Length: 156
Image 1 (cartoon, rainbow, N blue to C red):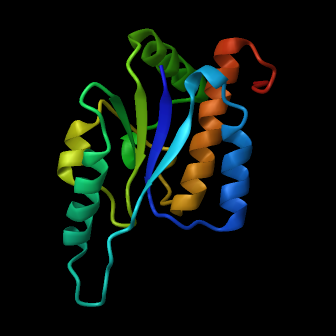
Image 2: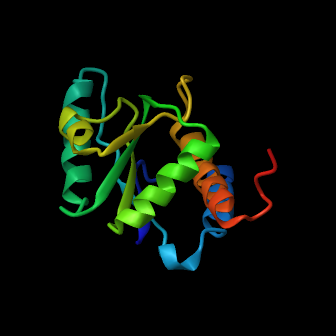
């Protein structure tokens, strides 16, 4: 199983890139983890945000393979504990399909993207900046892996 993050937004602050790279570098090599980025649709004062969401949605869906398992990160999703997430990760690995996590743009994702998701995961009920969501995603995925592998990272 290969795992990737598909995220809207090309440029992130250096601290985001550094922290994300640090956690992603800890992932097991068999995941062949990668970050794929989709450009944020242009938004102007008079532009309709929904049009931007639809444009980004088309780009996201265009990068998802038919047989990929999709996990959408969205504030309206389910909030598993770290142990629950480890259980989900185990089930996803057992399923054997490649796994694609999706972080949408500043205005969320289209209904088509939401409909394509096999699971919707909320990192928090708080609204998070996209860069911070990337870092939290990577840390929690690493924590889930550490729980499954008996690594001492997760101490609780």
